[in-house]
Length: 385
Image 1: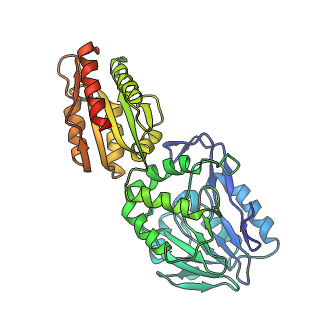
Image 2: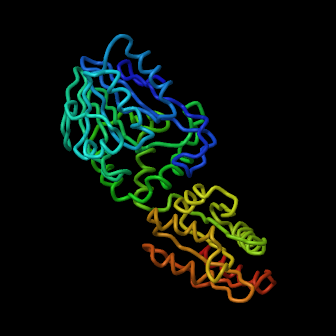
Image 3: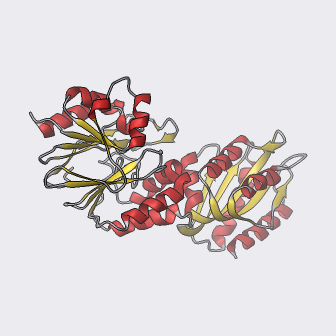
């Protein structure tokens, strides 16, 4: 991948990984991005996951030839970016490590290696000249670990954005719809930390940025306002689109029928956008993504052991952990003798910020009847208002 004449890409695509962070399905793989700035002081920007060590070293040596790097900038200590810090330090004994105090405090937790004589500690806004290029460092705590920082290269106006603006997918996949996998990546990984992302965007607004180099996904060079705008919407928890997510948790299929009936009614009433998820079978991360994308949501759950069917309980727990807020939600419950799912869902939703619970709720006893369909239509009407 070409970035500029002096900034070289040395990252690696991982197409063999099944679950990113052992929980997110990545059918198109993922990229571990790493870069080299060729200047008087050669600087490597981050390493890669241990899964990609051999290819990364090969890429690094191909760029460096017989030269040695002077600096390794560490943006983020998560192992998918930092697993090879000791490897490269041992390869190049004179290379210095550049990062912030929090990084160097945490570094011994990952490596049984003495870096103490090789650390260059930088602070907010501090600059490091490496020749023609000048690096400026900005702290980005909790985007999405406490030690994260981003680096702005002043001469070529490049923002090395750490996990910011990252996405799932190897680099040779089709990136026409960047937002889809970037959105799923953002809300499931960074989503909890909207306030911190907003703080970083405020810092970035004062920089003249021509290129964004994230640690996952494609390098962004054109229409940067689009990408920054998406991050502004996502991190402020505003709905991205008018539309409705219908998510259901069904044991024997009867709750599923009610949810699909509701979805069909909403479609016939002209809902702007609609997505339906079977929480037992569909990708949970995509359901989370859709919940944050739209301004409304219908939840349908069977009652189970005096509470919620586990996949609905799990879905709500995920939403709460990612700071879900500012949405309107309608509830459908089912139960054969003591339906209580709506009450349990409302209890969890009420603990979130600015959630409007639709007054019209539907309670089904076992199998949907004509009277239930009428009630579902009233609920659908309320959600279309």
